Length: 263
Image 1 (tube, one colour):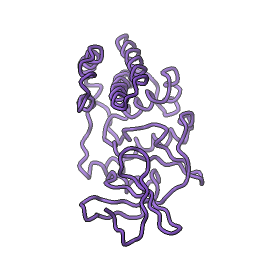
Image 2 (cartoon, rainbow, N blue to C red):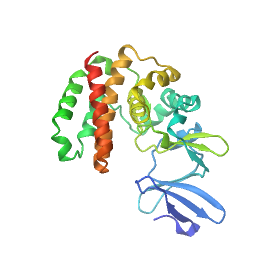
Image 3 (cartoon, one colour):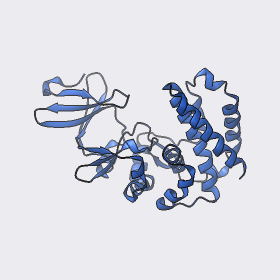
Image 4 (spheres, rainbow, N blue to C red):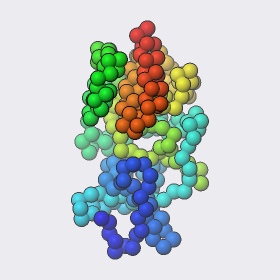
């Protein structure tokens, strides 16, 4: 598939996409990605992702990007409370350069109800027939009002979790895996991170470090998007045949839904 004349050895990397490889040639290592997000150039320029070395089109029509290989480690969940991590997330949400880059390649804003559409896409039949979940989804549809549209839509990573942060051996922090990047309400990004990383009792402390208090429109949208995040994880865990995680996430969904009803 790739230019074998360059004598690269390609080793698939974990992650499930089958699109990422470590390329080895003599003493050189490079991170190769097939059909990476078009935002990768801007991310590299801002120091958010490892340095982009080159991009080329393969004979099969795919785009191959090569980035500098960085030795390091992914973060642990507790590391997400580090202010450096929080500031990096805020940098992405605040970046006009990243926003203009995505708009330039044709990315459109992802509205609240688009997240519901994504949930139902290829949804397993058993989840389609779950009465509790369907009731909650109907309520979520009804709750969308002007507050959800009168916000600044920004660049969102789309899959914030501790596995997608790389701390290199020379102490540089990067964010990786940009396949789900979109333009949306940043609360959608934060809610997904909160749901998968922390109990609700810790949300306000993390968000305070981010620079946001849990009140008013933000709190309403956080409740809404955190339920959507629960739905996304329920679907993911079901497809991965992880029944314990499915049940735990359904319990989380019920708890957040009840709190939202009391608003």
